[in-house]
Length: 111
Image (cartoon, rainbow, N blue to C red):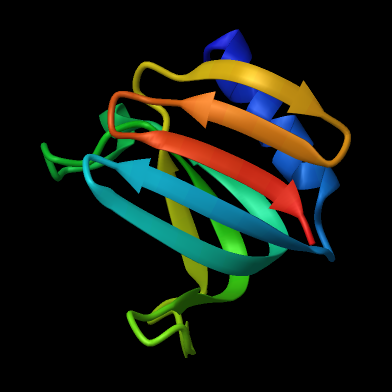
């Protein structure tokens, strides 16, 4: 596991029991998720049989996203995945992290 991935995993693990806000910018799409973290796992692409799955951090817990009307909608599964291919940590503080991956930009903050 790369150093940047390990640092992000540790920071996210420290947030266990709290709710974080994840803003993900991918192309022209901006998603906002409120997620209560229970634990954080790492999935290696080498450990999967699906060729389209990349290395990822899997946040376990519960959360909701905001729909087009601004209303919260529960996530369909008790997890949230951050693909970490090409991960760069742009900034990190006690209450916030800004990262970039091959798939998009993330701003993760405590509520």
